[in-house]
Image 1 (spheres, rainbow, N blue to C red):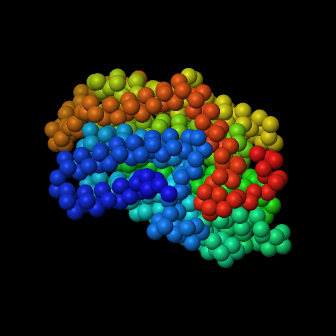
Image 2 (spheres, rainbow, N blue to C red):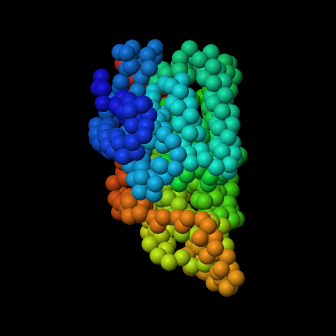
Image 3 (tube, helix red, strand yellow):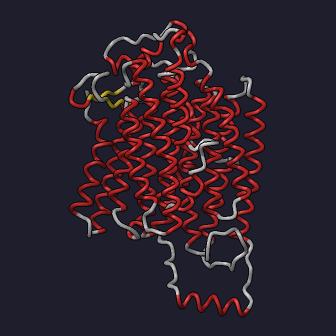
Length: 523
């Protein structure tokens, strides 16, 4: 048993109370410890990903209690990839928060930031469904505090809406866990994988109810239509660094679906056969449509980006809903892409906010020095819309290719291609309205503007560190494109490991796995 795997959870859990208790009034000390902590997370993420790259599954038993009775953390290719992605994203978002001064506009930003990372890392590493629920609640509490950071009525209303919807998800999660435990007597995912196979055809009601409830919970977390209503206002009103960090939050829901419905309820499991395909694929395709139409119809730039997150999650869930190794590999490649692209766009929106009167997509006076911001928006919009040559285009090709031999080929291809066209028009309209077109003020309006500027202090120009943070995210997108061959090959090995979970089960339970011969032959 190695102790390294628990450090991504323990490190922020230690730093957060330290920052509150020992550095509450010293923002410089808070920043130093927060940055050092996230840098350590990156090092840990690289180490864990390297350790699992050969197929090794790492196990940590809290209190040295063996599964299924004890709490376990498990590191395989999928979980360590998500840990590394979270750590890298957190570093650039944190740099932006420091460079823009967002971390000083409210109380306890850095402590809440660390608690948020604790919840995310725990959700990716846990091997137990109940502890997945616990880490979801840690996420909910910390994210609400971050959402209302810096105050404001609109932000508070959006935060309350966000909490209410997620509390509904938490309630459904508890019902699902109760049903699962009543049927199987365990909540350890590896143990569930074995016990679910033993359920007879005449005793499937409880387990099918649990499977449906779980997929509804994870669809809420992933903001899949029709359970997406909380996302547009929540992400648009959240402080820019918080919204950028939230780009990984919806991926927690996608990760949970991948993990549970390849390990516990795989596609060929008789007792839950067809449940995820019937529910998930139509919802994913509708999510693409809703997200892309939202991009075109948005009247404010921040809401446009929020709807692009819904559309990108529709892309991810479409690939996942195929439940094939090719589909999961495509989804994982697109998860990395969409996380980086969405985070960059939310930060760019904040740069735009600093140079315009508001974020409405309307003609406003030209702003001096906006060329850099316009260039960053252009690159990020190309990536999110899926235009070549960036990784969004490659990701969509992978999704289309994964669906080619399925019954849903026409629906997937039609929705993805038409949705991409709508996204291109929507981003093009927004970019030209904000950065290209301009409206000169008549003399009276110019006087009113000057008087307003005298009454209200001008916002500070974005710092170099802010541009470095956004540029770093876009550089990662370029690297994701340049090294697409290697990344795709790795996502395929992840998918292969997910569909042949013998090693995972054996490592967690320390007993030979009991996969059926049918599953072994299929994968």
